[in-house]
Amino acid sequence: MAPDSEKRQISFPQLHYPANRGEFPQMPLQWINSRKIHDGAEGLWRIHDGLYDLTPFIPNHPGGSYWLTCTKGTDITEAFETHHLKGVAEKLLPKYFVRKAVTPRNSPFTFENEDFYKTLKTKIMENLNIIPKDERNKSDAIVTYLLAAFFVLSPLSCWAISDYNFLLGAMLIISNSYVLSALVCCGHNYSHRADNWRMYLMNLSGMTVDEWRISHVLSHHGYTNTANDVELVLFEPMLQYLPLRNKPIWAQMGAFYWPVIYCFAFLNGFVKETSAAIAKFQGKTLTWDFILPFVLPTWMLLAGGLPSHWTFIVWLATMMIGSFFFVLYGLTAGHHAHTNFFEGDVPRNEYMDWGVFQLDTVIERIDYAGDNFKSLTRFGDHALHHLFPTLDHAELKYLYPIFIDHCKKFDTQLRTTTFYQALLSNVKQIIRKRPLNFRDSPPRRLNGVKMNFYSNK
Image (cartoon, rainbow, N blue to C red):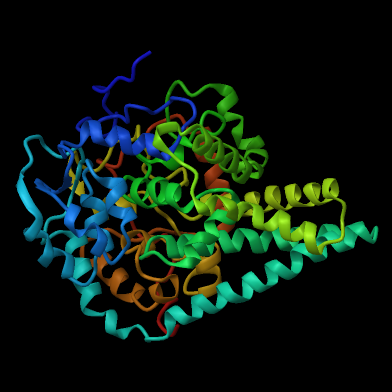
């Protein structure tokens, strides 16, 4: 059956439903190709209602060429607005203007100068100087220590098994799995920024940073919890997060079998992306970074002293447990709560400020607030990260007081939770079928939690 290019979303009827959603296999590149159908970019780059030819700028783009080459022919408004904080990009843009777009934007989100997001962005830009200059070095140091631990624990877990100390081996495998998940989370921090070697930590999991930049940075960050959020699709049909009235009972039972699904996320990404590259599916090709997932089993085999079949078992266990930790922290980061907006719910308005919409899709884990290690390795400080993703996780805590004060002025408050409450809420969302009505809801408050937890950090 041919994709239905005219299908619309329930919550935002003006937003086209991704043409390739539901096809097998689900790959982020399909999302980009679908955007080329709907965005009215005419083979160029669309920003708001203007079309730009950024081809001459690709080699000089400070963030690296990939951001522009992969988005050609699409609307990059959300990514453009949220990934540039110095005002330089806005000044350069007129140089590459071609003409006005013919069709309306395929998005319900606005970026008006006097509304919530743009006024907050101005405040953040004006206060970037309050961030200590060496804060990013702290994140870099955490990555270095974790990477060292990873390369020590990997052969040690094999050595313990070879010595028939299975209890110690199991403990080391679990410890190494946690370190692996933490490194992949760290890679997420760096994948939003200019090309750098630390972003390739994502590839240790079997995923690729290029695919991640599409599924997470461009899709999830720009269109959180809508049908255009690729990260929701990747778990379907086993875990169905959208509150659809026809959600089958077996999908609701995901509230019980979700730990099993979490364990296979890394392996699923590894098999799917490698197979797609070999088959050149959707134009995907093998690149040098596809060797990175093989670094771990190779190192285990060379330094662990186990036969190859036992080394494979230890590697498989490490990948599955690491996958569980990664998805567990990712899906409790704030977006999968049963009180959040999802496609199928009634939004506040037909067209709405992008920043306000983001706050309807996130609930902050208060027990991670301002902790650099937890923020970096467990997707912490998530609300402000979504609003300004190019900032390092170590820098966010200094800007939260500004953010919280700004929220109060716009009567759009940050909701808070804890890790364990978020985990329970995630389960409830898997079950939820009834849509929420954000249009008629009263202004949201802070759930009684005092928001002074960043003041002295």
